[in-house]
Structures are given as C-alpha cells and as structure tokens.
Image (cartoon, rainbow, N blue to C red; front, side, top):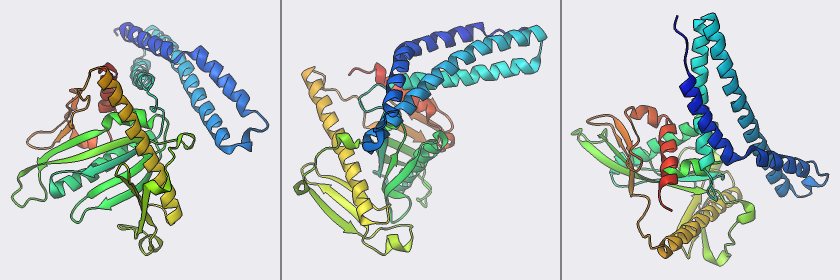
Amino acid sequence: MSELDLATEIKTLRQLFATIKEVINPVALQAEVTSLREQASAGDLWDDPERASKITSSLSRSQDKLDLIVSVESRIDDLEVLIEMANDASDTQTKSEAKKELTDLEKLIGELEIQTLLSGEYDSRAAVITIRSGAGGDDATDFAEMLMRMYVRYCEQKKYPVQVLDISHAEGAGIKSATFEIDAPYAYGTLSVEAGTHRLVRMSPFNAAGKRQTSFAAVEIVPLVEQTEAIDIPDSDIRVDVFRSSGPGGQSVNTTDSAVRITHLPSGTVVSCQNEKSQIQNRQAAMRVLQSRLLEIRRREEEATKKQLAGDVKASWGEQMRSYVLAPYQMVKDLRTEYEENNPQSVFDGGLDGFIAAGIRWRMRSPA
C-alpha cells in the first residue's frame, strides 16, 4: 500500500496560516483579551449597560478568535502525526481521516484568511440588506424574492440571525422590495461585496410564449449604525407616515396603523418598517435603518472626495456585477472577479461562499 504524502499541502497550509497569524497578531490579541477581561470584571460594569454590553461582546469575539488560532495550529500539528500513524500502520481508514482533516483545515483557514482581509472601518458591523426589483416585470419581482431567499438561506447556514424589517409584495409574483437586518459580527464586511445590480436570464414562467427573459434586481448593503455613533437627525428633517401593514400577518398587524414610513427630506431617503406589532417599535427600527443608510451615504461621499482629490474618477463597481443564467445554459458568473459556478440552484440555495471569498480578494486588489 502506497504511503500518504501530503507534505506539499501541509507546507502550503502552514505558510498561509503564518501570514494570517502575522496579520492577526496573537500576542496583541492576547493583551486585548486580558484588558477586556479586567474591564468586564469591574464591580461597576453594569452601571452603564450599553458600555457593558460592548465590552462583553468584544471580549467574546476576541477570545473566540484567539481560541481559533490556537486550535488551528494544534490541528495542523496533529494532522502530521495522524499521517505518520496512518503510514506506519498502513491503515486505510486513518488515511481517509487524514485527508478529510486536511480538507476541513483548508476550508477553515480559507475562511480565516477572508476574515483577516476584512479590516475596513465598518467591516466588523452587522448589516442591513435591501433588495429592490428592477426592469423585467413579474420576472424581476420574482427574481428579487429569489435573491432574498438566497441571502436568508446563506445566513441560516452560517447561523447568522436575520430579522425582516419590511417587505413590499408585488401584485403579481414576488416582491417589489425587502429590507432585513443580519445581526452578526463581520456581516457587513462579508456581504458588502454582494452590493450592486444582479441580472437573471431564463425562460420566463410568466410568458405564455415561453420566451427567454432578462430581468434585474438591485442589492443595497449598509453597515448597521451603533447607538454611540448615531447620526443626529433633527425632527424637522424627517416626515413620518403611518399606515396599515400589508401581506401575511396576524390581526394585530393587518388591522392597525402600526407600519411606519420615514422620509429624510434633505436626502430623499425613505425607510419603512412593518415587521413589529407596535408603531413605536416600527419607528425605532426604521430610524435605526435610516441612520445606517445616512452613515453609508456619508462614507461614500468621503470616499468620492478622496478619489477626486487623487484624480481617480473611475467607479470601482459596475452597474451589473453578477449574471444568473438558467437558459440556454446553466451558469452564475461574477463579472468583476470572473468567478463562476455551473449550478445556479446551489447558489440560490445559499451557496455563496465562493463568490463572497472571490469578491473580498478582488476588493483588496482593486485600487482605493
């Protein structure tokens, strides 16, 4: 029986892991954990619940990252021992276990690499995603709903909490728009590369002639603003309208004017929320999303100013960033990264890891 030789693969894995460790800096991370632990043990910690929550959350995230670094390093060492044992005993089952462990480590370190690239100012934040149907009639509204399901399925697989804030159902199929919040660390940094115009090409189920139809949907992703960084919005700058919620829901949702629409008059930004049962809760949720969008608008304006000063006026994101082709062939292709997959159903079922990883690496290579 031939020996199992994974020396090249393990060497590559160690080199990549060494680069990741250099960026993360476990020594500095340990110092941060120690400092946060001291703050968390203070007797007056919960005198300020907001600060206490921030400290304990930061401690949990930093400790988890430190534990992961130690665990991965140990698993690489154990893998080399496992390979030696398999070769000494000529054990087929142990060799299979070693190959599987190598695959698992490659995936884990690949995910860790992506996280180390998320170093933007807002990358560690939770995210708010808004999907809007574009040109294409019923196909476009149906496509918008397909995209919403795709992102929700992705989040379910990652165990990211998702809260739907608002849905506008179309008269025919699908949705006109939807807004939902993903409350997980690095949700914004991870998913921000999904922002842009998405295109679907398929044999239309809404066309009696069965002709091929092209439709579009826009995906907007903004970081969720933290309370300590909330933008001050004067009451004179907003208009608040209340209305009856539409779509599926209980009597208390559909028979009272509990839904809230807030219009930010200076920018024309409109946010609505109808998910909560009370008007007060919906207003609070809508204001949180409005502040997040205004924060993103301010960030984009600052970036545009920097680019103009640098003489770079070329947009970094094209209007059409990804195509989903279901006919006459099967393919999903990102037009920025050239990454593609030939199983659209798997992608629509939440299989976005390859596209997101390619997008994050592409963004890091792109000029600022």
